[in-house]
Length: 254
Image 1: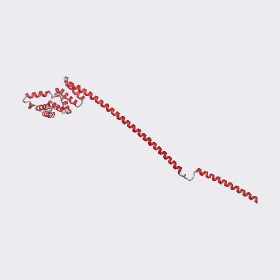
Image 2: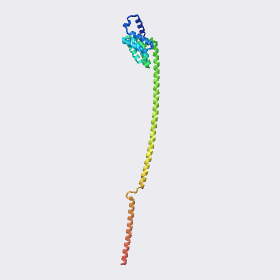
Image 3: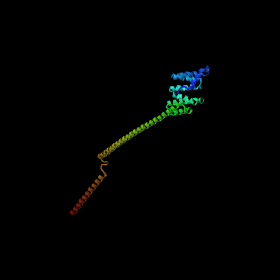
């Protein structure tokens, strides 16, 4: 970060030579006090003084630039960047635009916004191509941008590999769970099959021990009827023979 704009020092020198300067430009006393505090490293104090200068003259470029510097030194890069960006685009102070773009580039660099910092340094060099410090910072910002991209690519690759390993482990776990479920189902099916076989055997044993309904089977009844019929027929034949013999004997005796 460069120091306070040279125009501030020139203005202060002129102020010393003009008796009515303090009355005509009341903000200058706050700017002078702000500069002293800034050079002493009292950045919060210089911030307050530059703001007082702005209250006295809202269009004061040195007050706004000094405030941007004070904020930058306190690490408040986002606030400082907004001030420098506004000053760089101020059409009424175009001759100070290169320095404003340069400081804007520095605030963006501190926030690791390297691409935006590069554009700010380029804008400064378009207006003032002889600014060696802007050239150096531009080259350095390009180098840091390249390194940032490499780091991001490396992180992306590591995250991709990590996700790949996690997916691989998850797939393996899923396969193990699938195999375990398969084995459990196989054991359950085998257990059910054995249970069914035992139930069938028990049922068959119970059927063999139970008495038959109705006394006897139809086949056995038919056999008994057939035997009874044969016995009856035999008895009838025997009776007929006896009757015939009796008749014959009676006839003989007669």
